[in-house]
Amino acid sequence: MSDQYREQHKRRLSYMPWLYATLKPVHREWAQQWQTDVQAHLMTMETVQIGPESFVSPLANLFAEPGRDIVLGSGCLIAADCFLHGPIRLGNAVSINHGVTMDGGSAGIDIGANTRIAARCTFYAFNHGTSAGELVREQPITSKGIRIGADVWIGANVGIVDGVQIGDGAIVGMGSVVTKSVPAGAVVAGNPAVLIRMR
Image 1 (cartoon, rainbow, N blue to C red):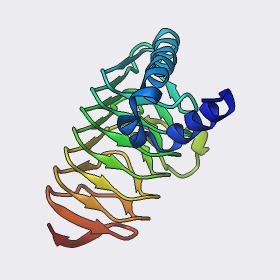
Image 2: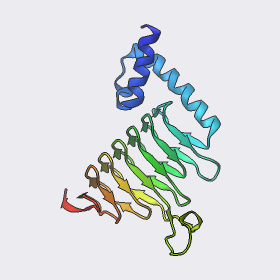
Image 3: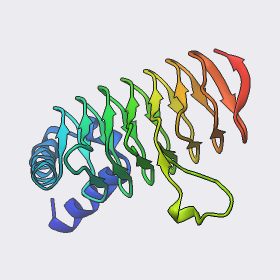
Image 4: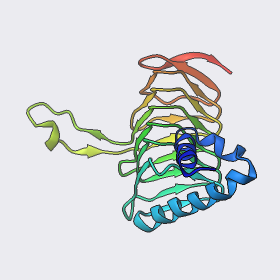
C-alpha cells in the first residue's frame, strides 16, 4: 500500500469510523498502531480516558481539563470535526458522527451504551441568565447536565439543551430541538420536539 493511499484511508476512517471494525488484517495492523499513537497523545495532553477497541479521529477536538474529564467506554467511535468539552461520559459502543458539538458545562453530559449520534448535533449542558438590564455576557451561568440513555438514536442536526433527559431506546428525528425530557421508547421530532409515537 502506498503512503498516499494509507493517508487517504486514514481520512476515510476519520469521517466514517464504523469502518474501523471491518478492516482487513493487512489494514488493521497499521490502523491499530495509528490509533494507539493518536489516543496516547490525547491522553497525555488532556484528562481523557479511552476504553479498548475505541476509535478517535485525530481530526476530532477533545478538551478535558482536570475536573472536566472525558471518559469513553470500550468500543466508542468519535469522528472528525467533533468538539467535545468535558465533563462527558460515554458508555460502551457509543458512536458520535462528524461535526458533533458537546459542551458539558459543570454538570456534565452522560450517554448510555450503544447510543448513536448522527452528524452535526449540538449538546450544551449550560445556560446563560436572561435578566433584563444586564449584558448577557455578565449573566450567571447555570448547568443542570444532559442525560442520554442506552440504545438511543439521535438524528442529524439535532440540538439538545441543558437539563434534558432522554430515556433508553428513544429516537430523536433529524433537525429537532429537544427542550424537554423524552421518555424511554419515545419517537420525537420537531422544533420544539414533540411526541410522534412510541416504538
